[in-house]
Amino acid sequence: MNAAADALAAPPPLPPHLSRPVCAPGVGEALALLALYFCLQLVIGFGAALVAGLALGTGQGVHVGSPLQSAMANPDVRTAVTAVTLLLAAGITLWLVHRRWPSQWRLALARQGFGFAPSTHPAFYFAALALGVGVPVIGGLLTHWLAGDHPVTQTISQMGHEAALPGRIALAALAVTLGPLVEETMFRGVLFSSLLGFRQRRSTQRDLGGARIAAAMLLSAALFATVHLPDLGWHWYALPNLALLGLGCAWLRLHSGSLWPAVLAHGINNALAVASWFIVLHPAA
Image (cartoon, rainbow, N blue to C red; front, side, top):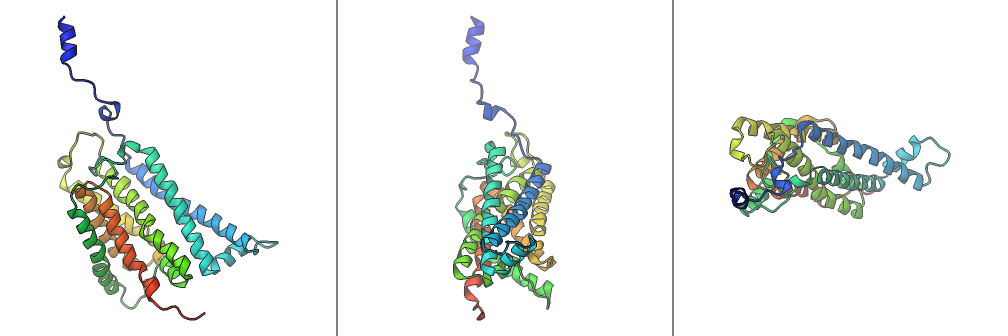
């Protein structure tokens, strides 16, 4: 009788997805995801360029290097290859993240998940707008001061200036939408949360020390800036600008309970960068 009463009085067991510890990505897994994303870009880019060169009829009876060189010498083909590469590499990466850590996809706390849910505080979207507009101004001045007389150009910006209007529009759309989405997922989602070291669902943000939070923000921002070096021609002058954007996006992710403000700030920053593709006059061919 007492056993039956105790059974009725006991609370029901938690659902399995709430009773288990959060299966968090470790730092090694986060770094492996980053490496995979850039390897996908290399493999897909090579394959797309080769297919484009063969489709243009430049690969018949010649060395493999010739169709690749011929295809990538055409600014419109090069832009199309870049757009296809980004679309496929980003799509595969986002699919893998969702498949590997589905329970973390929508969790709000930065140490518990990736924040694919709207923020409950609209003020953070206004903060994202301010960050997206302010970083290019402040960072641009900083880059100009550090670079001095040295030019600072990006490979994607050169393609945007050289390509025809349809290619510029397609590449700009990806740079403003899909690019920020996949990069924020990797850096302010998987990597940032792994650096915070979460493991238990019921732990709170207050359990984290200030030093660990600062280290996670700095490391994720520094790595975010560093991976852009190849696109910058290995010139370091723009790295502080990118690190500043990374720090701001990490702050938004940490305090807003959502990844979307960081994606918005990143997208606005990119939109201002690609605006010159449509403003600067192109020299006559």
